[in-house]
Amino acid sequence: MRPIKGLWFALVLALIVPAVLDAGQIYGTIVSGGQAVKGAGVEIKCGDDAPVTGSTAADGSYRINVPKQGQCTFALPSYEGRPSAVIFSSPNPSLYNFELAKVAEGKYELRRR
Image 1 (cartoon, rainbow, N blue to C red):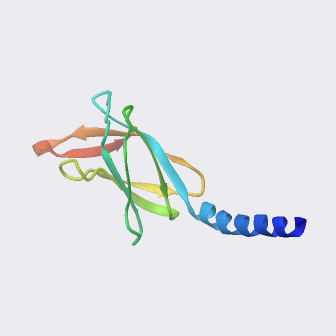
Image 2 (image 1 turned 135 degrees about the vertical axis):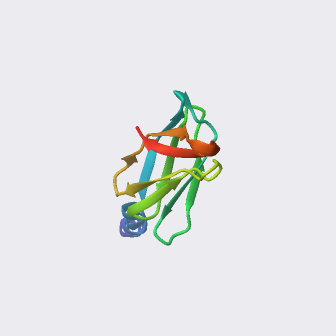
Image 3 (image 1 turned 120 degrees about the vertical axis):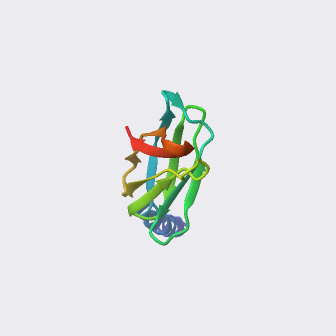
C-alpha cells in the first residue's frame, strides 16, 4: 500500500505546484484623507485575462491572488473617473499601498504611498 500512497502524494503535488508558481498575490491598503477606504470594489487586470475582483476590508486592506505574472492594472471601478494604477505581479506577494485622492470635477485618482 505504501507505493500507492506515495504515488497519490506525487500526483497531487504535481497538480498543485504549477498553479502556485503562476499565481501572484497583490496586497496592501487604501486610505483617503487619513481614513481607511472600506468596502471598495477592487479590480486587477493582467494582460488579456479577465479581471480579478475583490474588495477592501473595514481597515482598508485588500489581498487578491492574480493568475498571471507581469504588468497589471489596479482599479477602483466604483469611483468616478475609475482611478487606476500600473502594478506588477510576481511569484512573491507584492505590496501596494494607495491613497485615494479627489481631484477636479469630483473624479478620483490613486497615488502610491
